[in-house]
Length: 112
Length: 113
Image 1 (cartoon, rainbow over the protein chains, first blue to last red):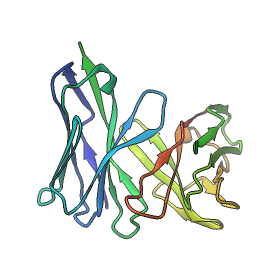
Image 2: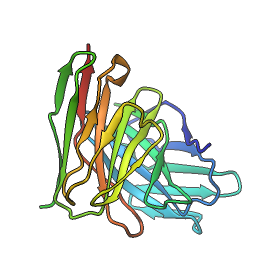
Image 3: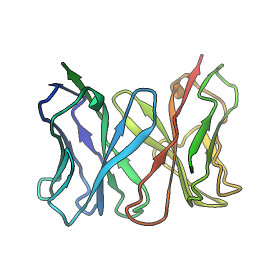
């Protein structure tokens, strides 16, 4: 079945870059997403990438997509304490594009 | 501003009781979703709806039901609450158009004792 996998934790020093990785199984996914969840809140879309793209940059965020390896990454430059949160990657379901399949989430902790 | 709300935010109930969690969105979105979030499992889809009177089962639908009588609301009912249903529940909505961004409510923390 479909499965989206992420490592559970990442700890980085303030000012360093963070790289959060994700592997997915459905090579036919149309869109891939990164969502952020702050403590006690719902998820918010950070960015997304269309499957025919390799890279997307949005201010401090860079998304890299390797379709051959089914690997998605999110790089956060100059990580700040406000970036501490859980980050979820998600893929669109091939048969029902409106449906998203979420990974397990990576908890990013930023220390001074 | 458009929003999506959930109520209650916290609920404690006993095993065997029926519980209904409310979800209300003012985005006028056709698509609505219910997820549960548990440590180590991420978000798992319970039920979803693509419009009024449409409902579909997700990957963990056993013990849950939904109904969609209007565009704005998708209540989630636990027919007979079990301790395994202790979780945080999120409702989301989206347009039926790319890139299908889902907007999430703040969540309901449910404890079944």
